[in-house]
Length: 99
Image 1 (cartoon, rainbow, N blue to C red):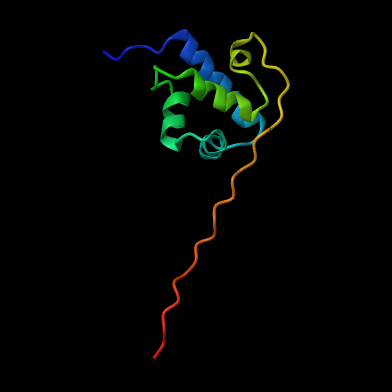
Image 2 (cartoon, rainbow, N blue to C red):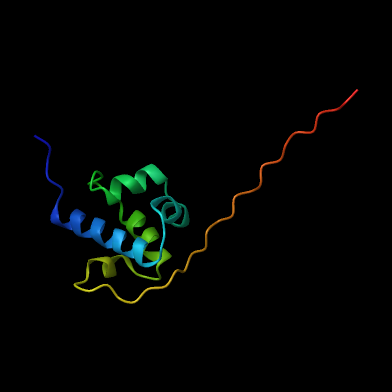
C-alpha cells in the first residue's frame, strides 16, 4: 500500500496548480522559470515528491513574487509573474561545404 501524501504536500500541490492556472502557465514553463527540472516539478505538483528542500519552494514562490510561507496561508495573496521565460537559443544548422 502506497503512503498517502502529507497534508502539507497536498496543500502545496494545490497551491502550485492554482498559481499555474491563474497565470496560464504549463508545468514545463513554471519549472523552467523556477530553474528546476520539469520532471521534478511534475513530481512536486503530483504529490510524488515528499522531501523538498526549502530552496526549491522559495524558487517556485519567487516566480510569483511570493515568499515560501505565503504558499501556505489560508488565502493566496494577489500575485504577478516576476520571472520571465528564458528564451532558448535558436538551433543553428551546420553548414556543409559543397564541392
